[in-house]
Image (cartoon, rainbow, N blue to C red; front, side, top):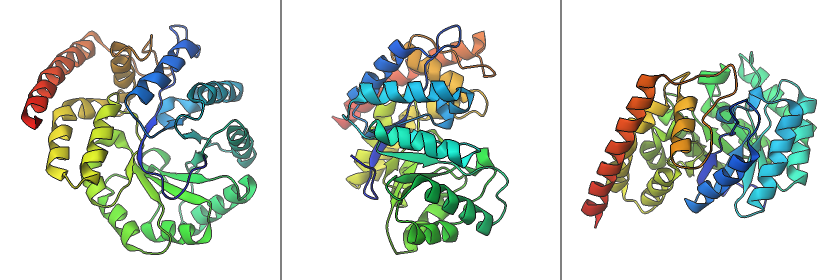
Length: 309
């Protein structure tokens, strides 16, 4: 199943589990796949920035990708992050991903592309190197890459490159950009939103098709997307408000990934919450905050369930 412009729902950004010694934990990876699928995600994205892809050696990236695709076994579509400084490296991992059953690939722009023409030219080269049969998601995350994509340029790229089928939208602030992309007309592509889901209800109201992020409670993302698709925006906001303290905690720059992996560990999805060095680690106080917020979440979810009948 190849990625198309009609992709929608929740494509969870998968963590990459490690052992205490920093090696990839494939047993936890298997458990993590089942954890995500049991919570009814539409698809998965592996080797993303929050999947610690830049910390993996090329052979590790390939081995992890092959393992995850084999475990998923076509049950949901999988997008593979292939961002790299070299176009040859992007093409190599992309083609191997597609050969092993990936639905498409995700590319973030290289740093230093300070003008629209440079960004357009870079992406044109990427797509030419990949070939027309590889569906592509553009990852728009300027807070990390330093590269700013205007709505006008994205619209131009969509019109010129048929294999560009998705925007991973995580500019911040970016709601007006999302609205402008939707209002531009022309070929409509999928827009899935990141940033831990922190603006998801508003993004859905602006025309997003779903989420592509790694929040440790994927069922929240699924619930919000479904409610918004049914035009139940107030109910979606009620769900979001219930999880907001944890969403906010995970969105702390520098510490968020360690918090996310600790919560996934506590939920039984992975065995170890270690991030690969150099990476964040949690203090005693951090652990206490997580414990308090998880207990508070359980209480508020019970109240929400009662209120929703």
